[in-house]
Every structure is written in structure tokens, then in C-alpha cells.
Image 1: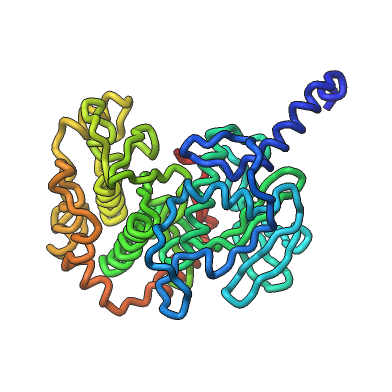
Image 2: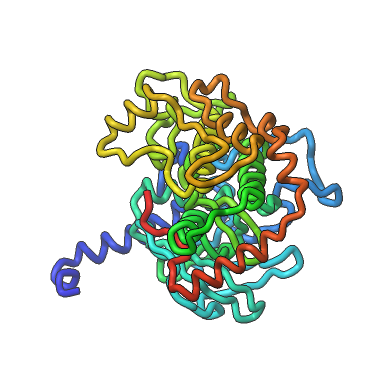
Length: 404
């Protein structure tokens, strides 16, 4: 504080940073200039049913109009947000929309922390809606702003998908942006590790089947409806709750597909990256099948209780093993587990090293394991609730924070 008082330029710098975030949070990962003024009058943001991609015949659709990519919605996002205002719109259901401020939210404590700021559990008093609130600092850098915008754009346009976390609304408080999201109870990485390490149990294949169905359907929605690839599929980005919901999250580094191909190579968590994404010799880009590989690594890890590769001491070791070595293979009897041949085949199909031979989502959705799992009647809610109760009784953390 003393330093700021002694140097007036610091006041200006901080004020400029806050102003820049207010103006530019609607900028895009595609390279639109940050901080540039909108060419349209800024309107208060109201997320309506018409903003969504709807599969319901009762909703108005214009079939001849091309769906906009998330990055193309950046200008609209800037126009719809009342940046700098402390009042926002909170849409907790299709019928219930509230004007709200931060005073309407009761803070129940921090549940996560990252480079961008914190995630807090809060309750909206008027509707009694419990939610996760991302509190994003106004001092985040340009790269973080782009990632946060991408995450926001994706969830805003995915409220029709039951396998993606829901967006409720947003507001500004003292220059910081608060994004209100659906609250889930735990991440899959914490969930499976507690089961294996503390309970000394294994996750039933029928539960893994439901996790697989939800994740594949979420990824397929991103591809078919938004024309994007997730690029960071891993256990910590798959969330569960006591109601039996399984949802995909964290779209900050999602990439646009141009002619079904993505180009950027440095996005994502390296341990789960497909060979074609980390091999510097492959310059032709990659598509959704790189996420299929990440899904295969994730499922093998969750099913066996351990990451399928030994720990790498360097990027070079990973490059040699993933790019030059044989892919991991699941067997029917793995680490004390007994798997059906359908599941074994599904995982090993996801982990086909040559990406041109690896299936895309339309083929995965036809796989016998997916079909059987989708049709099976499984009480996921009861299973998850029992594990969550055990986690709470043991003081186990529910989420992973500060993970790359």
C-alpha cells in the first residue's frame, strides 16, 4: 500500500488493468484485439432460451442459419454484458431469472483456487440455489483472459446439453468478474483415488460405463453443435454429484475446428495428450480423435486405479514413450480387476496409436460398450452419494486445484 501511495503511476496502472478487463472480457481466442471498444451499444446481459442451441421442437429455430463458432460470439458477448455494473442476471431455470448483486449471494467457502482467482461455493438467497462462483481477478493477463472467455462462451452455449456444467449468470464486483455456475460435488480424479487408496475398492464397470457415456456425449455435442475440440480431457475435468449427474467442465483451452482440424499444439495437460499432438514431426494438425485418445487414457486410469504410463522425468521421456513406444493396452484382468471384453475393446480402440485408425465420436457411440452402458439401469446417484459420504467423513478433498 505504501508503494502505491508513493508512486501515483501505480494507481493509473491498476485502474487501466481494471478498465481493460471490463472492456475486453468479450475478446476472443482467435486474436481480436483486447480492450477495443465495441461498435455496438453495450446492453445488460440476459441469457434467454433463444441464445441456446435447442433440440426441443417447441423452441424457435432457423435451420438455414449457420451456427456461430464460440469465437464469433465474442462481440455479442461484449454487447450483452453490462461490464462495470455490479448488477447481473441470474437464470437458475428456464422460468426463473433474477436481477442480482453480490449482496444476494452468501459465501459458503472456497472450494478451488487457480491462476485466475478462486472458486467459491455460494448460495443465492432469493432462489436458494447453491452454485459455484468463479471469482476472476481483474489483473489476469491476456492469455488468461482469452481462456476464461472461451470457457464462458462454451458453457453459455451448452445449457441444452445435460452432460456439460450449466451457466447461471455473471456480474462484476470491484472490477473482478464473478461467473456463476452449476455446483457439482467432486471431480473424477479425487473420486477414483479415494475409492482405490482409502477404501481399497474398485469402481464397478457399470459406473464407469455411465461416466463414459456422459463424457462421449458431451464431447460429441461440442463437436457437432459448437465445432470445437475440448483438448483437455482428463479425470479432473469430469465432475460428479450426489444426484448421479456426470458432466464435463473446463473449456478454457478448447480449440475451434476449421474443416474439422485444429492446429495449436501447446494446449492441454501433457500426460493425456495423444501422440499426434506432442510429436513435433507431425505438422498436419489433429482432430477430435486426439480427445478420444485422452478419453482412453482417462478410462484406463480410472478403471485400474493408476496412470497407464510410468512417471516421466522430462518432456523428452514422454515424447519417446508416447510417440515412439507402444500404446497402453487394457487386459480383461488388470491390477486385480476383471473387465468385460466390450470395455477392454472400447478402451483399446480409443488408444489406437495411429490417429487415422482411431474412431471418431459417431463410431464410439455405436460401440457395444456404449450402447449397453447407455441402456443399463444403474443407480449412479446412490453409489456416488455413498462415496461422497465416506469422503466427507474422512475429510478428503473433493476437487483438484492448481493442476495443469
